[in-house]
Length: 135
Image (tube, rainbow, N blue to C red; front, side, top):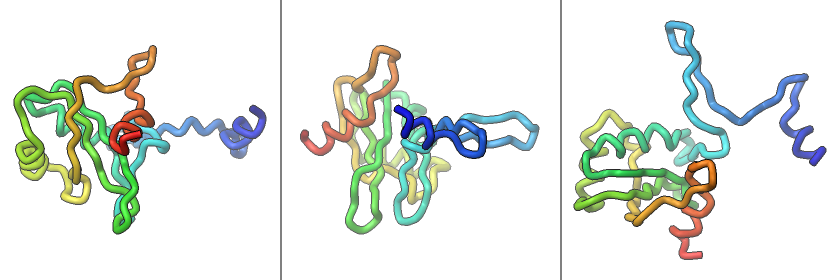
């Protein structure tokens, strides 16, 4: 698709959509993808940051975070979790007690048997959004 290619090429550079930061030691750190970023109340939230906190809880086997439409905040953070013997209140307390900023905390938790994945084992966030909306 020439239109999609032209959209990615800017000034001779190919824009992959990856979000990368240069650390103080000069190394580069991959933080996520522009397409996955959640904007809530004007704040940028990287799903991977929230997922890392959730995955640190011993009861959580898998976690994926998505942004869902919200009338007040534009998007709200929703955590889709595969876990054993834990509830939303416990996970919310876990996030509150972590270093995670309050505006990044999930406002909703969905417990699933498994996260939808593609053949490359990547989480299908679009399918998660369909699950959350009931489509």
